[in-house]
Length: 402
Image 1 (tube, rainbow, N blue to C red):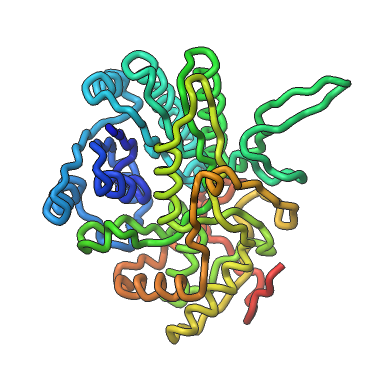
Image 2 (spheres, rainbow, N blue to C red):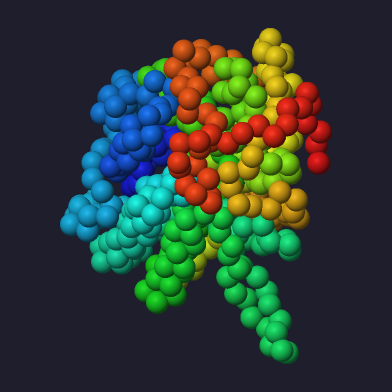
């Protein structure tokens, strides 16, 4: 299968490219190196020493004997995007190619506007290019569980059966996004749903939970193939950030009460989910939604797991409740359905003490690369980034599960 991976230089994009290439697919990746440029802007960097995209594909050729094509360009450039689709003729498009950070989108008006322009316009160009050049291709779009927010009802997989004034319908699940970034993902979902209904395109929206982990089978073939691993306030995900904080001796950054609950999954499961969606495509005209996560945890639960695992490595870890830089419910109901990928055959890699201990061991290898000034948040939902870090409200020896 010809698979086009948008955002193929990223945390998930590069492992996905290797994963599909290893399995015999013809893979091409597209990237504008936005993530690398945003890290330069913020004075941060990947914990892992990632190679240039050209060196990555060269090393991949050395260890696997397989080629991955590279296209450098911006999806907001219609000429570039349309020519790409015309020439490569993808059968599946895996779309990671967006600005992925809620905090970054909340810095100020310029960052909010940029996030919308980059994400929404880029996605529209992909949809129009599909319709013009590859109308039978399948779009596998990375969405986010953050589109749903924190409703006081069960979160269904994309759609909700509604009865109102004696009439029934099946409608898209209501969205309550929690940041400017998450709003762009909602706009994308609406736009994709629209073109599926009107043009007959086929798409799967993967509303993904919070990803953690470093290693994949392909990356372990050569250290030069390792993916990026972010731990800063803008791009680091919760468990990854906690593990780095444990290694460097910063009290784990539990925002507010710590009872905020989300869905989580191992990076290996992300690859498996994307493969399952690709090999079992949506029908023509279908906008399909999968909730892509394997387990639910509160922030406090994660802090406890990391604290225990770090102590096994000899790191004495403090946990602290910090001023919450976000505007969100800290006590809330959360029950999200996630059966569709399991029904397709997903076999999850669930979180364990041993896995977290392995992550901490890997992080310790790169301890000298940790930029400690990038860890405690400065970006607030009310006020943006004015340079002042959030303060510790209370330190605790142990954070109990909710």
